[in-house]
Every structure is written in structure tokens, then in C-alpha cells.
Amino acid sequence: MIDGVKVKNLKVIVDTRGRLMEIFRVSEVKVSPKQVYLTTAYENIVKDKSCFHMHKKQNDSFCCVKGKIKLVLVDTRKGSRTEGEISEFEIGEENPCLVMIPKKVLHAFKSLSGESFIINCIDHEYNKDSPDEFRIENKYYDWDNLRPLKLK
Image 1 (cartoon, rainbow, N blue to C red):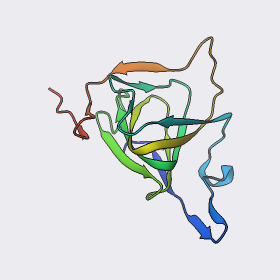
Image 2 (spheres, rainbow, N blue to C red):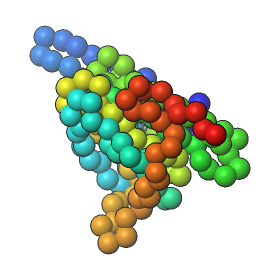
Image 3 (cartoon, helix red, strand yellow):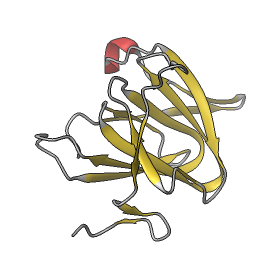
Image 4 (cartoon, one colour):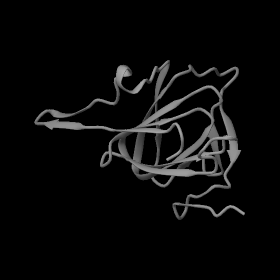
């Protein structure tokens, strides 16, 4: 597991009226969201296939609430004890969890079933005039075969 990444398994409560799933409590997971948004991806779509992205200031907390995604993280942080490691997660309705991604860790995901809905809780508000988003060419992961690339 990449240093600083945390995974919280979530419990879904089902009754005759529907379902309830608590995603997090600030006191429990030390997430301090400044913005929460929903993003979706259609089946077999990678956000972003040709590159990964990361943030220099922002920590992300991903939860796939509908469908299923393959979330891939790459640690390229110089001096990190897990530098060079790749972590893969299949999260969604069948495996509900919250994946907390520390700043400077590359990430991307692919929808594996239907249209997947992902809630992201971030600890810095998005600034459209100066976005904290950096795209790095994908030389780490084979999205067609869902496996890490062998680096030379």
C-alpha cells in the first residue's frame, strides 16, 4: 500500500425503504472537506487514459457509490518509502469503501460497469484561475489489460 493512502470499508444498511451508507465522519477519518463533488464515467472509459494526475496541495477522498471502478494510484514522490509503488483498488457497490489519496500521489480510474458515480471530498476548494492539478503522461498502467506496465 502506498504510504499515506487510507482505505475505509463502508457498511451499507438495507431495509424495505432502500439503502443507507455513511461515507465518513470527520472525527473518524480526519478528512476536512472544503468541497464535495460528483463525477461519472461511462463503462470502459478511463479518466484520463493518456495521463495520470495529481495535486500538490489537495488530498482526495474517493467513494464510488454506483457502478464499479478500477482506481490506480502511483507513488512518484521522491524520497517516499513507497516511491515507485502502484496500488490498485476495485471499488463500488459490491465493495463500498472510501479511498483517501494523499497529495502528490498520481491517480486515475476506469469505469468497469455501466455509468459509475464517484463522490470526491477534497480538502481545498477548486480554483479555476489557478488549478492545483498536474497531468503526468501515463507510463505506469495498461488500462486495456488492467495491469501495471513494466518500467525499464
